[in-house]
Image 1 (cartoon, rainbow, N blue to C red):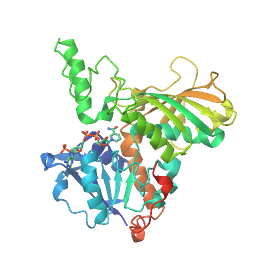
Image 2: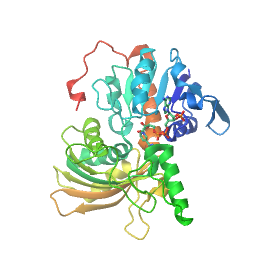
Image 3: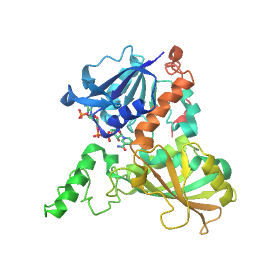
Image 4: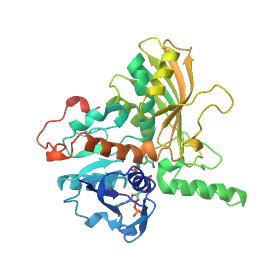
Length: 355
Ligand SMILES: NC(=O)c1ccc[n+]([C@@H]2O[C@H](COP(=O)([O-])OP(=O)(O)OC[C@H]3O[C@@H](n4cnc5c(N)ncnc54)[C@H](OP(=O)(O)O)[C@@H]3O)[C@@H](O)[C@H]2O)c1
């Protein structure tokens, strides 16, 4: 039997990728509906190579009878409509940050913690932040071997992480530079073309940013509540593909050979580390790919049991749409769509789910 699947935010950067990936992976869908704001009603979006869907209005859509909804319409819209969809019996997989840290809502990267899906009690599952998703895929095999205690990460995040408007702004500023047009700054705090900006999401009281906070708390919720994370999140003039320079400190002695073997076998990871010119992966090479690439693996001699590496992935895929579809696949494979298993309304959620 196939499922009825709704894609919410279908005209956006993540929504379009969701439709592409559902088709690419032959997700067992009998019917797919594309939803967005009233602005987009009637617009056409592609579904696979040969189908086109007419966008419908989220505001008036009835989720009754629909099995799965993949949401990426922004936090405030998910906050309002995801609980409505869940109340109608439709399981929601949400890409926004709104529900990620709430109790009773699993935050899932299937290669790392697919079993947490069974703990869903509100019919909503959260997809992590794009930078967290690729990082935990790479950290998991190393954590299993060496027990990671601390992570220091600097990110180089593509403008598509800020949606289609962010991509348009980089394009316009880049083009404008060559015809002497003054840059228009709207999506980012400063000019992004030919520049880098050490600021993503809003500032918090301690001087860190919300994006950096998300990487820390989400890593703890997904991988291990005892891991400390210091993140510096930076926007760079790359359209698609987030890069991360990651250093870890572990409890156990680090063995480079074992680390390589584990990364080679790890689901979702491709190790490309040739220690020669070009023997590493850059963001432009990961566009349209599913893997999280690890390169530049080396011992960090500045701390005890330290290891450093470079990690790259397509932020619209593993960082958002692919991970969401993998969650849907895992729910199906684990038989969790049957008998309202993800809607145990009266159950008190585990305390340790809230970080
Ligand atoms: N881009 C990434 O790498 C990434 C990764 C992880 C998570 N996310 C999260 O996913 C969400 C969407 O990101 P995006 O990059 O796809 O943004 P985007 O390109 O700006 O797209 C936003 C989508 O949401 C829809 N939308 C906006 N307001 C709506 C409303 N009131 N009702 C229904 N639909 C509405 C838009 O529809 P209209 O065209 O009709 O306005 C559009 O389809 C954000 O919360 C973002 O933080 C993004």
